[in-house]
Amino acid sequence: MSSSNAFSRLSRNGAVRFGTVVLGAMVAVALAAPWLGTVDPSTMDASHIYAESGRVAPFAMPDGSSVNHTLRMGGDSLGRDIWSRVVYGTRVSLIVGLATACVALLLGGLLGMLAGYFRGVDAVLMRVMDGLMAIPSILLAIALVAALGAQVWTVVVAIAIPEVPRVTRLVRSLVLTLREEPFVEAARALATPTPIILWRHILPNALAPLIVQGTFIAASAVLTEAILSFLGLGLPPDVPTWGNIMAEGRIAFSQYPGAVLWPALFLVPTVLAVNLLGDGLRDVLDPKFAKR
Image 1 (tube, rainbow, N blue to C red):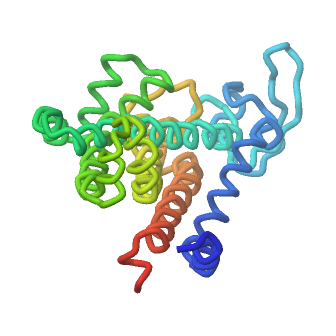
Image 2 (image 1 turned 180 degrees about the vertical axis):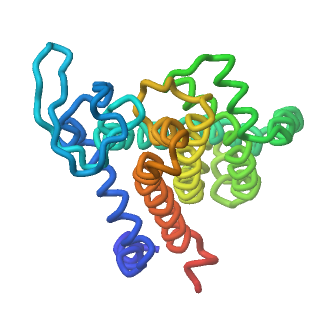
């Protein structure tokens, strides 16, 4: 399929358009967080505890000065501006989603190519992957965060490790098919080194399914990070993440539901947009769906 034809199919796909617009808006919010969230997300003021949305009130700054600020989404249980915390939380969620997808694809892609191309490695490596897949992903992520500590990079690793076996199995199945193709056999007949065969002949033909899988991993990572933070097992409570904001707001949810609903209104469209984008890419890049 030519690149122009693929782009044309993508542009006509309503799910892809919706996902691209929503995800682009979230990226813009993350990049513009210092200007959109005009108050530091960690600044606390006891007079703004559970303040109403739209209230204009002075905020005490760390240097002792005061600034008038509109509480667009109200205040939380510690008097912090929920809007600023939600905006800065967009950065954390997108970074975790993108980084997790990259780590999982890199490790899973490498292991999958080794398992699919070398039969001796396959027998041992896939049994290890089967063992990892037998452990519930959320429990494995909790155990890894507890062992490594609650930081952004440790959360990324903890969420990525459970995804590696799935990527490995996907790439392995692709390599098992590609290694029997005539162009690979011709390269072996010409005594082409194995690393070059994997890099130049097999990897490019496995990229399309990997890209699609990466979008689903990114969406799952954003949701898993929110779950871990909501349970108090993710990033520290002072770090503005959507999960932390909802965890703090659930204490007084019946009286002040906005503390939970506002970050949820950012979380749900983000996960939905990434999933829809992945569905659209699969429709275009997968020959079975493209024929439909």
